[in-house]
Length: 491
Image (cartoon, one colour):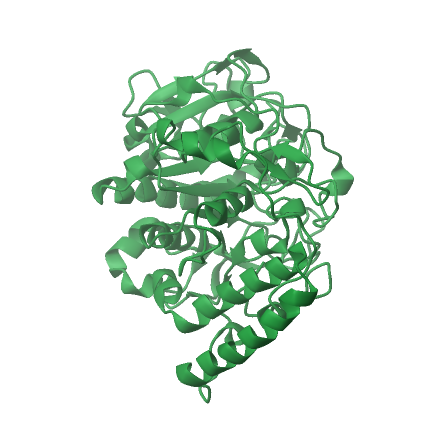
């Protein structure tokens, strides 16, 4: 992993971002691909060039997004439903912009799994089972690699290790859960047994928060200006000073240093031909690419976009993150993730609305979603990019049909039935897959697991689902775990 950050936080292995730039990464991880021959079958698979994963951490309620229940007012609560551009499909009435572009989207209303906890790692990896203790143990050896890390790994296999100027696996807006009062790094979006070099390349954001967010909990004593509610136009995603070339070091001097380093590496390889050495070399190559090229920096520069378009996305952190994701994939990025993360207070943060559910949904969450998501889909479509860019909106689980009696009301965790939305990249347009019971609490037909979403994404990206990746002992693991291709989602 190469972290592009503006702070001096360290990872759970104790290394900071400067360490990675200097030594090129650590870890003795196996790099031999089991079943690499299966990649040759990719021509018969999907043809999406890239994927944008939008992950609202904390888990939105399907009742207030894609599966409202107007026939049950006590379940539906304070919000109603509206018709969309797809005949017969209704969504929450607080999403009028999204309603107009639902003909570009397939909604899966029958998502289900057995873990009603914040299993980010369960949702985005092939990990077969889950326990809450794993959530803050990002480097636990039981974890499986993030979908973006698998894509990055396979891209390097295809390109014989060559490093692109735009990394294959990028995470926005910052390292997950690094901006809260309890910054234990959430597990899930990491390379796991593939090695730290396949972690996302994380950015940071320097825009000031303008919106004083509604409270998360009754006992909350501090209020936060949450950038997900609004930020300044001069806010930017950026490469940290530690990742940039010092002004006194010319490109020629840097290349001379690289030449000397290469001589050292040749001697080192005579002594050490382990996977750790290969990891080091690949990290150095990525660092060199980022230091000597402006392509990544330019792609992140949302200030190059017209102000009108930026405002269409929403002058908030999620909207600007979606705009940056479009720019990154347009520049050649393969897998870009945009996390709607907790900010300020971790407890009940982001979309985890146990308390003050309605104020947070109305003031903070749904307005930003209704700007960014439909604009991203329309922008990609207008540029002729939607058919080659898979866009996934998914989270850990859903929320209960019953509204609790906590202050501001709320919905608890619920994984037995929830919704996911997919668009572009070979996904059908204007379709609903699966249905739930009258209260939205159970799946009635066509149950879909998060592993199936991963498998379908791999397929659409042209990756054979029989492909396996190795752990540190060389044991082969299926890239999507138990997931299966869901052809009913395809165009």
